[in-house]
Amino acid sequence: MILQQIINGISIGAVYALIAVGYSLVYSVLNFSNFAHGEILMIGSYIGFYALTKLGMPFWAAIALSVIGAGLVAVALEKIGYRPLRLRLAPSLYFMISAMGLSIFLQNFTIVTIGPNFRTYPDIFSTTPIEIFGLNIGRLDLIIFAITAISLVLLTWFIYKSKFGNAIRAASYNMRVASLMGINPDLIVSIVFMLAGATAGIGGILFGMKYTVYPWMGVLTIKAFIAAVVGGLGSLPGAVLGAFVLGITETFTAAYISSAFRDLFSFALMILIIVIRPGGLLGVVATEKA
Amino acid sequence: MSVYYEGIIILACVNLLAVLGLSLLTGFTGSFCFGQAGFMAVGAYVATLMTMKLHTPFAVSLLGGMLAGGLISIPLGYPTLKLKGDYFAIATLGFAEAIRLLIENLEKITGGSRGIPSIPTRTSLPIILVVTIVAIIMVRSYISSRHGRNCVAVREDEIAAQAIAIDTFRYKQISFVINGLLAGLSGAFLAHYVGFIQPSMFGIQKSTELIVMVIFGGMNSVTGAIVAAAVLTGLPELLRAAAAWRLVAYGAAVVFIMVIRPQGLLGTWELSWKNIQRLWQGIKSIGSHTNKAKA
Image 1 (cartoon, rainbow over the protein chains, first blue to last red):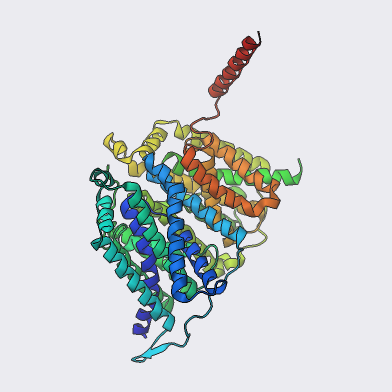
Image 2: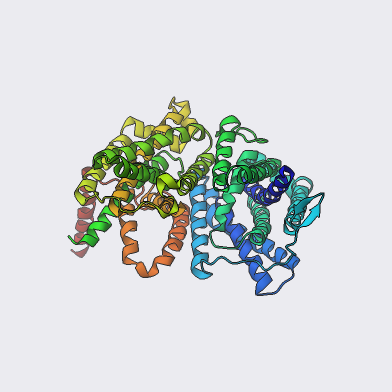
């Protein structure tokens, strides 16, 4: 029973990990939390939904379309909402407000144009679970886990091995010095948003398959943000670790205490971590620096 | 005055009380609060339960709701206000959601998601007007005092503020508690005006609407926040047909303001006798210029 719960926790944690990485990526370079990330996920989820139902695309093509679409939307939002503030060296408060504005806009624009209905993804994979050593593992959970793992490996490879990844890591230490070394900050920020948007696109499809698609599903990514905070904002391995910790905490609360108090426990976990270890599990202490 | 317009003014005052707190906390002190509706919910439910279960007089219930909003900010602000603003923003958002979930699940006390019906409606226009005006005067005198200027210093540059010996954490904490008090009061008035409360009245959308009012009016101006609260409460009544597009426009306008005019519509301008005189002088000088041009 406990093992079964751990597996359920890992399955939900995998999706959180993918989204939390997007939060952390933007935070590590721009030093603010992109609260419109959830809405990018929502857009990715809708793209995937329409690609599968209206266009009748195969699953892999839907993922590719959603990755590209969500990535481009993320880059466009950066150009509209954040770039002018970046050039003005505005305080991070303004970034957060701008992000909130983008998030309100996208959410309600979707409600007005597409409608507030919940939509269900078609069943692409068989719903009968696989039994391994007496444990029931949903096929969908297994596929979600595999897709997340592949995406995270690719992302890690890109960040740590490629030339652009090198530049992103340099920019995350110090954007100004990096730009003195011939790194184009606009390009780096665009790539970061492209990557964050791409992970949100995949996350959107996975969320849509596991639950449903609806305009305010972006709110769900608060959990991923909590995961990023628990693991340490700005740290990619931290985001993944935090996501699994949160996923397992959630399933255990739901199973042994009460599913109604699941979200309450997540928030309590975050506050607890902030009090005990403000930098998160793997992060550095995030006090304001001059 | 017809009951309809009276109702709009009362609702504007309810929003205004909550916006006043937010203006101090987010506008002047620079701590981004995402969960104002949570504090309103605490005030509303505490005041309602006092009236319904303990049969306290209206004034005592109001005071109870107000204190509840203020007191709950202390343990929430203590761990989160010391850190970077992002943590505080998400903690307040989490708090508001947690409060909503608690209310929904503690059905025996709060009536769950169905809410509490038939609360005695005791909020009247004169009472709320007087309370709102007193609150405005108090917040404005706090802001124009030494302490208020310290708050602005904290918003502008926390490191620099610390360097000139401002206890930044203390000022953020004070602003947060004042904000909680005002939000609690606003919730208590709301419950005793509508006569019915349920957790869905205090969702993320309510918090967003309140913060949008502060941003529209200008982060540096109480007058701006007041004007924005009045206009944005009345506007949806006029534009009932375009209700669905209202929030779309709000979102776009918030981004637009941040990008083009981050100081908000009124910037730092405050309504005061001196500023009115100055404005009048300005109008007169424009008038004399045009007269000269004609001659």
